[in-house]
Image (tube, rainbow, N blue to C red; front, side, top):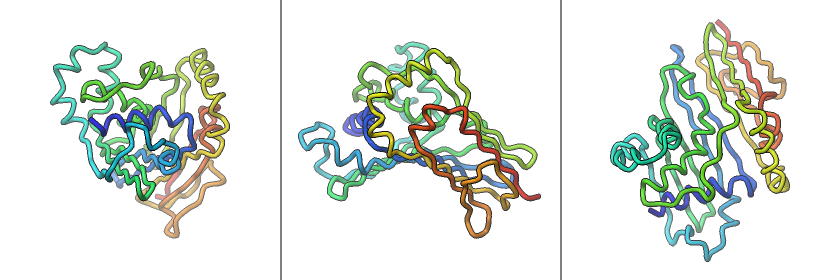
Length: 245
């Protein structure tokens, strides 16, 4: 399926082209909400040669509901390794909206889900990267060399009026090896960004992020960082926000 060939190309190319991600969360008063991992691949779109098989002759505006796909392909999934099945299981509650317009130079992906507690979407960025695992079971191609092993995890909490996001390195040795693989892409990634955009039900009272900006009503917080720097030192990216009572 062309959809999955394009998706796989995006996830392979992401480490070799300037890219811009947005991690956006909407919170309700009871702690429930919605998360989106948004990828803007407009610069990448310009790098894909016209001869590439993933190039489109017409625009695509499509939404994939992973739960439906996994149910439809359950027999094929049962033949995968336990590790691959676990990665697909993480996708179950997400949907993916993909909009690609070759003429307009647009390539946007929005992977989103609702949650009752924000901890339900722990490690959403890794889940986005592992979305290429749907390729083989849906008639597409897998990522060359297989999906990379996860070396970090991101944890979220929103309790007693305080929101927190922190990254934990799972395996230091594997993490350092993953940094070596980034070396060849530093020139491209140096201009890539990762934006945190959080919408709270009440005004922000305080945060540990001095560079953060806020909406006029004080309920939306935005913080943009260099993607490469965050990848090199993920544990330094700790966000804490206290809301007014």
